Structure formats: structure tokens, C-alpha cells
Length: 337
Image (cartoon, rainbow, N blue to C red):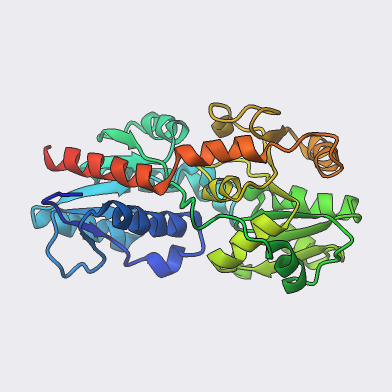
């Protein structure tokens, strides 16, 4: 791609967010811009025309201010909302209103605000931001997430799973918003299956009831913690079912990953999945714990047909090539402001 602009992807806070969806989004932006040949840098000492910021820490805001003083344009990516901050950490519900005010302060530092979905755009529009909001999916690297023949064997061996049992996985921070409470209950109620949750969080910020439930887990429930993307690809591909029991999302990169590996998938029936996903057509949805339990059994015992191939078509729409093109469109737009 021929373009005269140079983009700075601000990554000063990357180490803090690398194990979260925001960290994955930054990884995807690096890959997407590389794929389409857009000139970018991660070094803030380099010259650049605009900076793309994904994080909402004080350092991020300070850098946005510096960029404005230097006459540069700022694109702020709205990954976080008050709504998906709730039910996350100790005191997160009490802090949520103040967090919303801080997000508004951050996002208004952008000359343009990006967000992953129409759903998250509607939420941010309700915040009455002073900036225009554009939708750009976080995207998915379809080539990377392809299944391989040895995935199942490697997955079962790596985590010591019983090969005579089918397996269910989930991925995300072990917090109530992500549905870990229901996942733990399901593992306890369904000992005939192996359950594996990937993702970790500092124990100090975990609510006591979640911490206690994780400590008192059943033998068929496993918590390997944070793993690499390659190990995660192997897990999506090698397991029998991916469940995404989240109660609130702005997109859910892990869902795109699972779709790209052609996994069988069960999600919680929440607002963000209403537009792109139809229950029983391109994904399975459950409303609550009882519904999840019923659907899991029906999917794993083949009472319900696999929707993996149809689901993959949704991932194809959100390829990283398309994300890269959309990012450049937005960058060019902001440089004309």
C-alpha cells in the first residue's frame, strides 16, 4: 500500500495489558498494518503523523497531550466501557461510575475514536463524547488459527486430560463478567467431561467468592493460566467445545479465534451477539446455567449438529486484511480533519 503517512502505535503500556483483549488488539493492529504495507513504528522517538492509542492509563493520556502539543493527530481506541468494567475485580462495581468519567476524559483526547463493534459504538455514543466514532473490528489472522492434525493429542497430553472424556474450554480473565462462576458450576455438575479455563489474574484483585470457587475445584476442572497463542490455537482445535459465557463484551477477540479454528461454540445470549449470530444457525446460544448445561450435553453427544463451518464464515468477514484497510481509512480521515 502506498501512503505518505507514518503511524505510531503507542505500546508503552503493552506489558500491563498483553494478557488481556486490549493486548491482543494491539498485536492484531501490528499484524494488520504489516499485511497491508502501512508505514508504522512502535518507537515514540521516531517521527510520525498520527498516534494510535489503545490503553487508558495516565501515561497514555499524557502521551496524547504531548502529541497534540507537537501538532500530531491522535486516534483513541475505545476498547473499554463502564459496562464491561463491572463484575471484574474487587470494588469494580463501586468504581465503575468514576471509571466511566475517566474513559470519557481519555477518549475525548482523540481526534477520532475507534471501537470494535456497532454495539460498543452505541454504548460510547451514550457517553456523549465530543468526537466522531468509527467501527473497526479487531480482526483475526485466519492463517495462524488453522487447525493441525496433531492438535488434539498435544492438547490432551499437555494438560493431563483423560482421553476417554470430551473436553470443554474457555478463555479469559477468571472474573465473574467472563462467566467463570457458571463454568466452575458446570464442571462440578458434569464430571463426565474435562473443563479447562485459560487465563489468569492477580489473586489480590480477585473477589473472594471466585478465589474460593477456584481453590475448591473438582478434578475435571483445570486452570493452566496464561498460555501462548500457539498453545491456545492447539486448545481451540484439540478440544470438543469452546464456551464463551461472558456477560458483557465490546467484541470478544477470543470468539473470533475460536471461529477461525472451526471450533464448536456455545455463547451466552447477550446483546452484542444478536446482530451477527443466530442461535442454531451459525452458533449456539444459552441463556443461563441450566440452558448451558443442556446445550453442552446436546452438542457433545451430537444431538445438535456442528455449526463450525458456518461459523467460520463469520471469522472470514473479519480478516486482518480487512481490519488493516479500515484502519488506514480512519487514519486518512483523521489527517484530513
